[in-house]
Image (cartoon, rainbow, N blue to C red):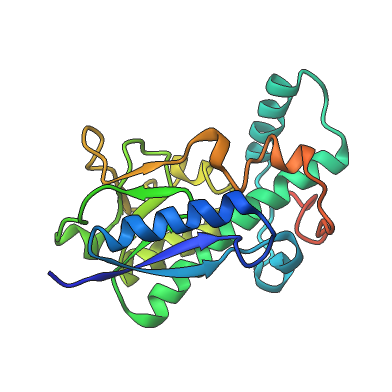
Length: 227
């Protein structure tokens, strides 16, 4: 069976975190055990966001969803600084995936995209769908910590942001198939990729962005809305 490349989005080379190092190694081991070739891919972080961000306006409906989540969890009103942190962290996650898909387009390859806390449990099944769609390897449609994608679907996926503006990394699942069927979730009952525990996230929007000091918050990408 031909081994696919598996790009692991990780901050292991950006921040000094023992947890991220161990979880990234765990992800690499699970790839080796299941016929995938793991390749570490440096996540976009606040200090590098402006180098790659295309200037999409933040959708006002996404802004309200994000702020509503904060109000519900924190039981208080977010300050402008907290709001910008949350937007920036979501933009970093989005652009990390966007840049991996861009690499897949440039390489004209079918590959797996994983987040650092993903666990690959078995071989990725060969299928024509891997050429046509973003095939979610997890058990929930919203999950993005493991999927296989080829250049055609990657182009369509990335182009949607140009059409609708910045809708957040997780929120894109609400829009991704509105224009054309791009993403499918065939492994609901038997996921190939698991992981994604709450205590293992390197990009926790509501805890990490709020409680962790960010040395740099790029104001040119946040606070710019479509309303």
